[in-house]
Image 1: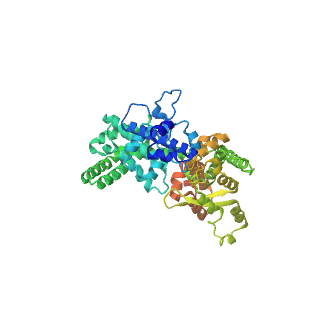
Image 2 (image 1 turned 120 degrees about the vertical axis):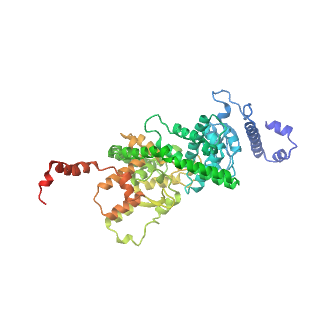
Image 3 (image 1 turned 45 degrees about the horizontal axis):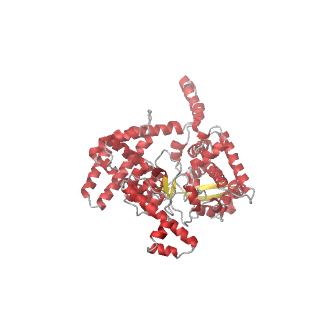
Length: 525
């Protein structure tokens, strides 16, 4: 192909400029020109719904069952076409200074029809990360679903792309089922907000939230209900911007219909969700075993010690990931924090805590000797919490300090993007932080605990609240604990604490037995 370009197109200005370059630069420029031509051809082929196979520089010798177009991905940096299973090899050799997300070839058509392609950050962070299945392709081409995702993304201070993607895919799956019921594949998400289609939408809701048992997917159904309300508000805004006041009023009427039927559609789902939380999550048998937590703590400490004891140890991505998982697990369980909070600690947060910027030096002189030793063993870091304004504390034990410092030292050697601002990042030039649940699960399986299913961040928080409720501590200490947990006293009692069954049986049960036997009435006042 290079010979063809230099022979047949040598009089074109772009080729003339390439011929003036040194040999190495000329070869690279020719390669980029070939990739651009193949990319433009395949994109046009998809837009025209052509039946021809997509072009690529090298054909595979062995055919596979699925179509070739579904197995190709486009490098976001150089626009080259590669098999999705081997594009990681190319990423190591791609000379682009800025890493951009890869694109599935099938997604080029819906992305071309996107109404919000100008929002580069949203496209790079959310749209390009969606799966390449039917739901993902539908979401990429639907105007309303894209704008709902954009609304959630722009209003989220943490820019939680996974939550935004979950909302978009839920709406996409609901739209797929809605199309099946209406027997019309041309319907869009905006058609679901037509009051004349309310019966079909109700049926689609029931099908999507049906899990085949009595409980059903009650939380999913509730989520879809609130997403429909959000769709109404976003659609009204789009119609008003377009000058379609009549359509905006019609969508408002749909909202009134939805609110009128809200109780009969979602009342049972609310009841089942509350019942499930009270029966399952608050049962003492659902708390993690204390022996498992001890085994897991010792295992995490051992992993950190093994990987940080030798400063000359050559780190690879496997060592980096193992140390990262041990630290995230240790911090999450030690602090009884939500799973995503220690995982999204930023480098700037760590440096502030390492320097002791959150400790007032004027109050250190008034503490006891025991408290002074505690101050030396623990470092205090504050970071963004669950809400938009809350700052939550994370206490870092001394056995984690060396591990965090080693992670920061080895970032460049393990493929961490310079743009990644998190202490616990993914490798392979990702800009995201790890998921706390995955790291805890990995360490629990590696430590071979008896009940790994019970060791989750949520259950560890239930354990901390339950054990703390049994202690006889001053109210000031209880208030400090509630503040650390990030919830109120009422929330702690009604949601996180397991009912104190032993107290109920031994104390209240004894009183009721005496009352039933008439012993209390015989006692003198």
